[in-house]
Image (cartoon, rainbow, N blue to C red; front, side, top):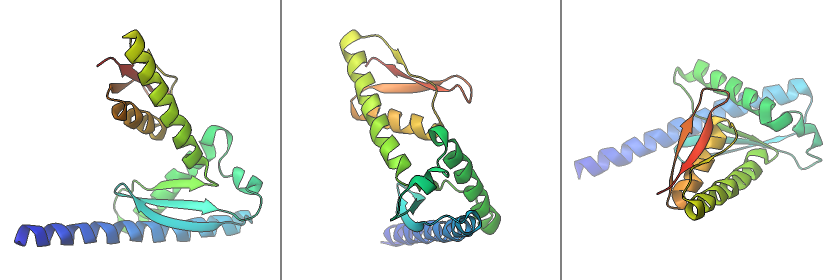
Length: 169
């Protein structure tokens, strides 16, 4: 039972650390929202062993779209800045995920469909399918969808032109 107890304690420690990351990120983002004079509520969670922070708004999310930018470019930069703020406070590298106005949630759904469609195409043709370049977040979602479809995939290329190749079984 000693191993079980230490594993449970380790899990609780991880959860506490991730919750602390979320709190630090929320404070940082609230400060940014104040500076930018944008309305938004901060929602925190822990998903898949990482802190997850979302900025949501009851009013028109048009204001928050400024924090997403074209193709999520501003969101990616804001996520990196938030991770740096967490790192500065904790001394540990953060894998925190940031979402603004549901952008990543919608993107995740689109990418899962893209991965499933590519897997279906590979199953019927027997030929590998190369997808367009994607961010690390986007590639991860596609890899997960391909794996769920029973195939395998790899990332190829150099950032920022790194892309997913879906391979036959």
